[in-house]
Length: 169
Image 1: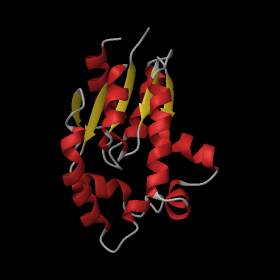
Image 2: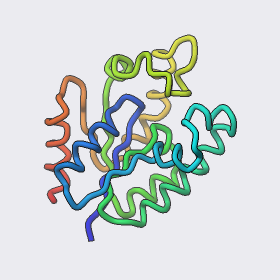
Image 3: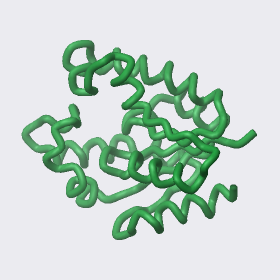
């Protein structure tokens, strides 16, 4: 039995990109992006779910999916930026996984995602300000991860290498 690898952090932190690269290194693992799973189940984008069914509906679905995946093994799970806010999600993910917070500055995050219209929480007048507000609000929980990986100024290979060193598979 192998432990899951969970990637958390704010949007633009690199969770999906890092997860896809990690799975190439860990051949017996499967990569799961919870936002993609939810989009597939609902047959609509995350912004559409927020708009037509509500953020609360999305968060409840996210919680159920995280609970299911947390009980499996050999997964690399990329969770949405708000998922780690929920204490039940944190407990479930840490029960059978090592959680990595991919930490980046607001400037780095903003550079990575500016112009991305698939971020419902950033469809506002001041997306950089909203990003900063979210980081301030969520970082306390992100820091409850097992490991914090600083990503500012680092290339993808070194971020993946930092995770590989810590999981020792």
